[in-house]
Length: 384
Ligand SMILES: [Zn+2]
Image (cartoon, rainbow, N blue to C red; front, side, top):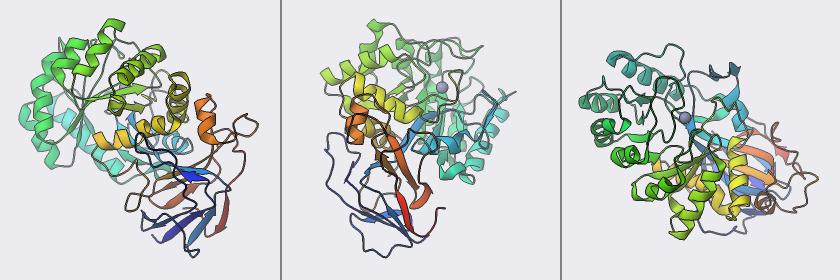
């Protein structure tokens, strides 16, 4: 894999909630990990960041992957690679529910999860790490199926689309999935696809999932009076781009009051009817930071470390020994802010001037973000 160095940084966002920008001027990556918070000047690949701020790669914990780099929902190809140009280094499948003709019998449901897990284990569009194969919790499954799937590498489950009369009735199967070590996410709010039923706050509490998926609606939100109940449930509270923005702001207000911002995680819930949104993660960070007056560093943490923690992954934090998933941010060219974090806090999407995943340079100048005020430059070596 070799070494990569990023020099001439203006600072580094660790990704830890509540931590200010660190005055780090360079990064050295070896064999996919961060080896040092300085540079020796002899990397196989050397990037001059031109004064960019380094942040952890963004993690989308609600991505509607299906197979390959294809979404049947919007008949689009290349959307995962395009999201990498939006600063996304990892995605978690919200189940392969959009597969045309998806099976709903016991064998078929299990086979789909295994096939997707295997396929994405071996295929990384644009270098993005896709955690694929999220088994859809259907009434035809038996509790022992989850242990069987977990032994075969399936680590994710999604509840809220299955043909249950009340989605809360799936709770015994959710317990079985969690006992098998799976990370379980529920759908919250109004029904999104024909044939599924709404998920109420009572269902959310009964299900007790690890992630309360699109707690701000996907896209239809819970009633305002039910939002406080989210804090009684055990899971991470996920706010998505393709949900109700007003509800997101209300949930952030409730989280701030309770000192519970560490429970908030960000995602896109795309591709869906809302579209393919390559800038969906950084746009969500920018909107929630600027509208809810949350420090850009904290909004970035919710989009990285928060998701990594619930997924039990080492990504999301920039420090020695962590995976080298790094995004270089600049203020957007022509914007009023002189640094990228101030741009986010005033609602301007920053310029993405470089994306590194597992220590490999994937893009220098994003083709999707606004133009960065100063462009990073390859001093030595080549992109992956
Ligand atoms: Zn979804």
